[in-house]
Image (cartoon, rainbow, N blue to C red; front, side, top):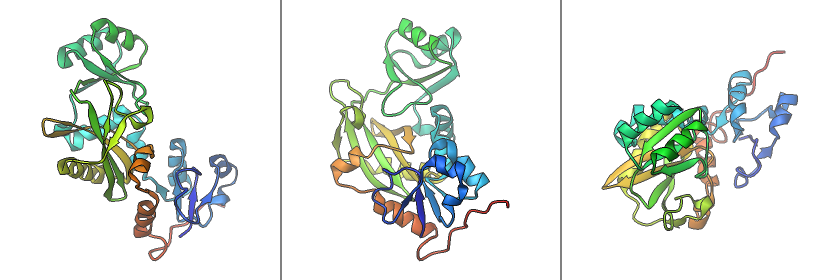
Length: 267
């Protein structure tokens, strides 16, 4: 199975992977000749690889497309698992949207920037003036109900199964994000949360993502998922993603399976 990665770091655990710079593909698409899979492309290249070159891409294009914006992602989650999404208001930012958010969600509430990761662009808002100030600097007001939690679950999904799951525990009100100092606890993970992630990932066609789940009074809420998630939590638990990725790719076609489709191009 011939694997080409456009990200040198995320494919370190995969044996025999050839690394190609994304810019090199634009200069000479022949550098991908023979590739059964193109791994971890930047988001802007996914449609080019799939539709112009006929490449098979991992993670799946659906994961990239749904994961690129919290607005699109939240609406997708609402469609497939409405009972497991916190109450969310998405409106063009402005005074009217602020008043609607206050009426529907109350205070405190959580605001998020549609394109952000690693816990950045997220804030708990406790005052109307603070919400107005936030909205003035945004095109879209993404507001969500505040959930009273001091931890959340990260469920790592690779292929068609849960690779690992652990609590991310914030300290004294700090973000529950490992990259920003949260602790990792792999004990007592509710099976209901894992089953929810499996159902949603399957419904959306997502094959590589870190799902963030809040657990409130015995009920799981999907907060978001990140396609290119951080690996620090896995490292602390001693879990390697590489073997699971390789197993999934082989089961989809490659070494020991059907050959890749190649990269057809017009002469």
